Image 1 (cartoon, rainbow, N blue to C red):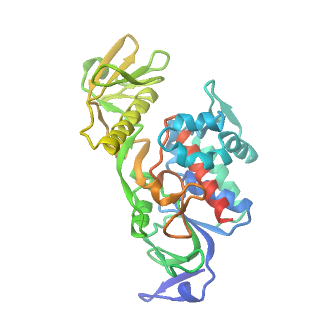
Image 2: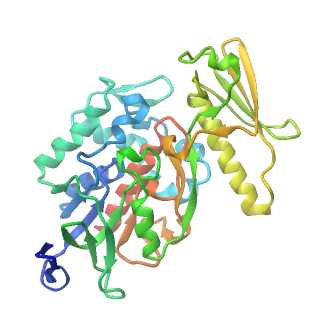
Image 3: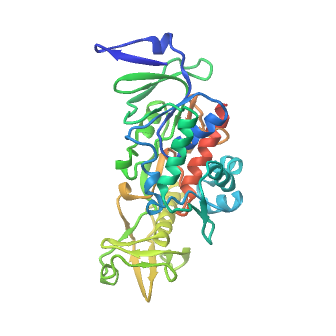
Length: 376
């Protein structure tokens, strides 16, 4: 299956003689692990190729290490909450809705805890429990995993023939594959391995990349009413509003507000910031105008502040990346590239994101399942 490098020369069996694996999954995060799990259910030969030394590095960080992996709501409610990417994700979410994801983890023997608002966590509050459940499954089903193995490139060997055949390049060898699933994530928290590899590979293979913006990130302010409370969390009395220049309320959310040294964060702030990014992008697409001036009002405890044209923290600190591989080049019914047969996408590598509260992991799981089912 592998074409190995010997003495500085690359063997050509990977092009001509080797039997390609049915599915090469590039990226061992939420989408990649779920894709491999679904592939093994369908007895589909697959391999996971992960640049970091272990699988699920970013999953281990989600919800402050507690892993809010989905939200126990109906598919239609979920899609209504997602916003701009809902139409694209609709088929995937309806076929693999939150309750199916919950059943999947229960089938792996993971005790679960449901919060009052429907957010789902492992009962012990440890994200590692979710990652270990995948690991146990992969050992049982003998899924080959290459960790500490960054993919260096993806080459389409025989364009136009059948469903395509690819070489996934690494520093030491090539992997021949009938199909490739890009599940490399966005560009947030690069130390977890999300460094934009998948987007670069997709661009090389003819896809457009939507510029990156931070999604679900804190907002900066030096207001002493905030900074003097750094480290405090306000849950019951946290709230945000996004206001237009004329005072209209465009968005409102009740939830956690955290006071930080740099400003404010927490669910209410994250979702307001994400709304602003999408609102401004939509205005640019529709009108080509300079983004209107927006403001955010933040309530925490007895205090309220108003941030004019709020400044988000850098994209590398964001919970999710807005931007990535353009959805225009991907078939939502299959997650397959429209221009490069055999190339599939799942999760945050695409220009697809949701609010905080388990939505982004659900999108990763659902699109991964959709891609594998399409290949199968």
